[in-house]
Length: 141
Image 1 (tube, rainbow, N blue to C red):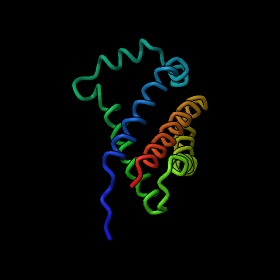
Image 2: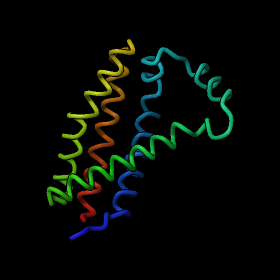
Image 3: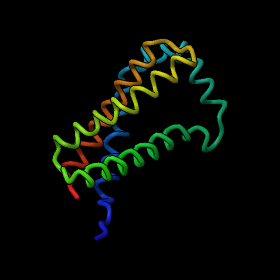
Image 4: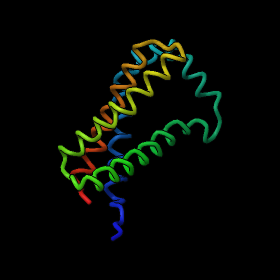
């Protein structure tokens, strides 16, 4: 028996996570910039030097990534047959712990980035993953 994915749930989960990320990083822009070792002026200059789609590419990539995360989370919840807000949020947190926290931490360590950058990014991704899971769980199959 095949099952069509709940596309509206997947898209809404990705939108919710993307909006959360925008708010989260807006609120933490100062600490994030310091952790990156950059100033606001440097970022503005870098952005001004980009042309066309390059200015928006990171935002598009973030949304596409969150769509993929939402689709994968949907698949996990479908296989477990556990579509509740609680099960979705726990699944999102477990996936974050097992896959996101580990890769972000490892990548930042090898790149020699500040621990504060990994902390800020990991907390942001935790929020996104829990939101994705909760929305998928709430919408159901």
